[in-house]
Image 1 (cartoon, rainbow, N blue to C red):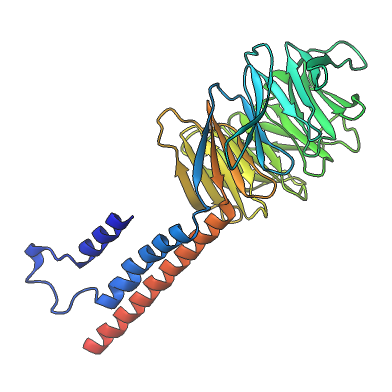
Image 2: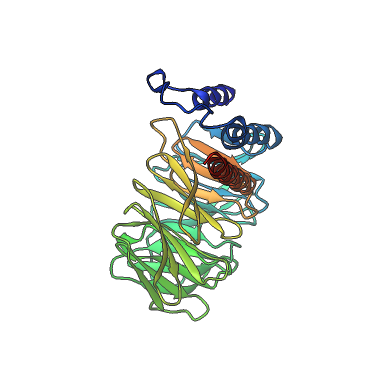
Length: 378
């Protein structure tokens, strides 16, 4: 940063010898303008980097490929799911706090319930982990025999969404009873599934590039709203806190914001490659999305403008699932055998906005002084 600062100062004062005779008698940029337009923003950035050391990236490396990850209830721990284990790490120290080991699973489908119970789908069987016997116990659901493929728990753990042959089942986790059974014509198309924050609505990819919304309180058998507009498979779905908006990411290189009542697109955010995941920020003023190109991007929700981006310099890195803690203090992105943390994104974006504002003010002041000086000379 310091070398860049010195380089910026030298280049701003440099005059091309070939144009020396044509140069004005007075410097094109007086010292005050150099200070306001070049030095001041750099000084602000340097000072804030030292005053706000809590805004930084760090990497948690594991010995196995991570298939999924999630935060615990108070957002102090990260849970990673691997082929042979589910591990719990402390976010600040990276210390492994707990580990559940079992026979290798090629594509583990697991979710940790807020009460500490591990739910799993493996070889078409739905089961929960008993912490006393340290064994998985198969769940026998009422109705016909089902073969399950994936699982998703709601935010507070009230419901479990289970993909099965021929459709989807919504299960009440406390009673382990089926609340609603939804049959769809093309269940293999389901790649994304989501519960709303208040657990009253669920959404999943009903068909290729199409999202269907179902009201859980009414046990709807058919969707009350369809979201059409993506041109490729849906990679993630998320509801706003009031359920009025839905955020989706897709392999068509876009993230889209929808009106859940009308099904219309409110805003589109662009990536240069496949988008693997997108999440609302805590106040929903910004969103964060991760792409297969190794970029994580922050967008302004309303305007769609790019606020900032982070590039994983490891050429093998590909950001998969993103998880944003409920308190907004940590973004965790999965990359094969690693978890990338971005701590305190709110403070970071506030700092970035302040820097941009200071820079704009400095540029405006510099232009005003320049126009005033030119008038005086004339």
